[in-house]
Image (cartoon, rainbow, N blue to C red):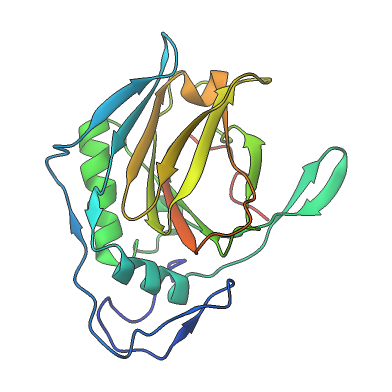
Length: 228
């Protein structure tokens, strides 16, 4: 069974409680079907430095609410522990994952469509997907780089954001002035060049924020990258 399996998009469901204490009334009306911009027509490239870049496509996935609700309802969400400042701490967000190696289908089908489109555009085969659920403003992720194998010199990592927008911050490795990019409501943000090696990224706590799910397509990950 895949990490995210269950009723298909558009099926009626009971109210879906979220960590923020709010609910989505999915039984009152039918959500519009999600639609991918297969042309990437609004893509713009941002250079963090001479070798690191971001591709940004605002609203790459239109009508993201239905997919958000299905993933929130059907993913096998867990809360991982991480070593931080020489202490084991509970990560303040929920996570789930999928990989080709699992032998399970990537569901719902629109995720497989995304994976194929992104693999074709960036000429790599994305073989794993990480899902992160930020329930409210207190959910966050500290400054970090993705756990990619060192032999991948210029990793590409597309990130699709669903739900309420949060600020995704980037700063030079080890510290320095950060740059903020809004990520939510179907936006696509792709890190490329040396961005995963020479820059760190984070989503910091804020006083108030609605729920958000990020979907990260990856390849060349370390074996323990998605383990709790």
